Length: 310
Length: 285
Image (cartoon, rainbow over all chains, first blue to last red; front, side):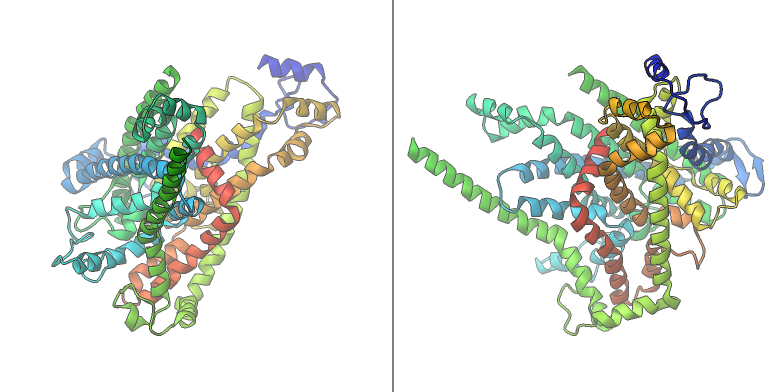
């Protein structure tokens, strides 16, 4: 702070009197009010609602009036199986998708950085689904995964099976099917992050390992993998945040069904909002907030610390 | 020795071709087939599309389907495209200006607020938005169900990512440049808008491209904050079509095709910026 202030102070010019902080005699060329436009929008539409949610989660609420009812919403949330299950489903979905994105992303990235033909084209193809809206992908895969006429089951039946699984109609399978489509859609981003990491490894490391007689697998295991920790941190955190909040794909593919078997927190928030239970919906939001904070913040801290230690 | 290098390079070439071809076949099955399916079904007649087969249409009805989708429900798709374009352009331009200002001052000036602001930025990346309270605030301000309300919400949600990008990029611009401009008598506003802002061009392009994709593809924010039959955006329209056209797959897939094409065009033209933005922004997140 002093550095900037003294430096700008020493060559103080007769500046035009702008809206800078009037308390300071020597004006910094980097006025604090530059924060104002962003700050106003962010505070009113993000910070205030976030804090308000902690209060409204404790009320019976109709937008116009709210009645304080203590922890009743949370009690409902944790005692109703169809609400509580959404919490479990959210965790399963997030862990499944981010785990698969790490493993598949790294393997595909290693493959796409090796000496093969059509590398650039393959990278583009793998990445393109990231740019397509989840609604479009959800609608497409809802058709492709149709239990009777869908392309996937047609192929399975062509190989001789009598009947393929009911991907989106079987309660035990629906959530996993949606998770697989989410992996299909998001793995391209993980691949991209890993490719950026692998390309940055100095070639000498591999050459040194080769001179020491390490085969391709050992080079991967002892050189590439340890150096991919920062990239892995990024992939895990990004896909966990995305996975825990996930709504679009689940809503367009199953709508939380069959029954409540693929409901996640975000879809419960929407359903309760539609039903007019604003307090309960907000309680769901607070649960989501707590889950994200409990899982992501310590992970963030822990993974970053491991990086510093190295 | 020459024999061994020979076999080695031949082995390498074999690997390069075999592995590449396997890669092409696998990605074709996993990633290309769904897109071809979208295109084929969008070009079929309704009867043929109902069979959901993966086959080229026997009778091409591409133009008819296109016209019918456009005309459906009183040209709702045209309205939706106009709305989505306004929201995307409005939100992204506002986002770029206000977050560039924050990223710039945050990087250049150290005050005791910096820690707090950095915390807010990280929170913006992690914390899921509280939807109903946001509606409550918007209703109080008369922003609910309005296009400018939706734009402001999009700005609030996308800001954190942009600030991180700008802060990182401003760090690469030498301070001596600022000092020279101050010597020449530039005030804070001129210093930023005429000296620094133009130098941010490459990161601005990246932010614009990445955020346009996010805003255009967003489904949740319009669903909550911009409801109503007239207030259509493309994603919500597509979602409604999914329910209504459960029997007319050709029209549904024509709609999917239409909202996919802008992204494909973006990707072809801005491949480099998208990749840069997604990876660098991600690494800092």
